[in-house]
Length: 61
Image (cartoon, rainbow, N blue to C red; front, side):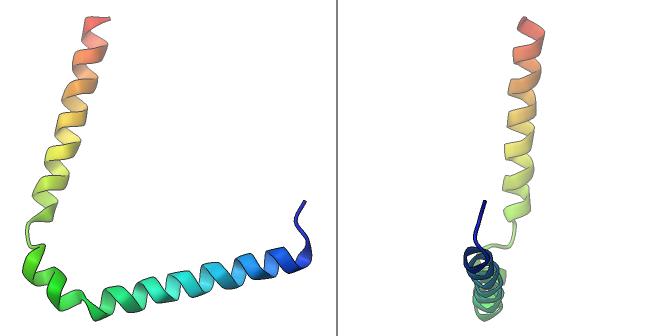
């Protein structure tokens, strides 16, 4: 399905992408701690809203 060269390129791309994402996150970790303190509250709220909508949808059918 894929040639050997395409698989090697894909593997190198994935490894490079992951390493750059880790490097970028490490570089900005001080900013993240300062500006994104309580983001878990927003995440929990989003999950609760989705759960409520799902319960309403199933209960109406």
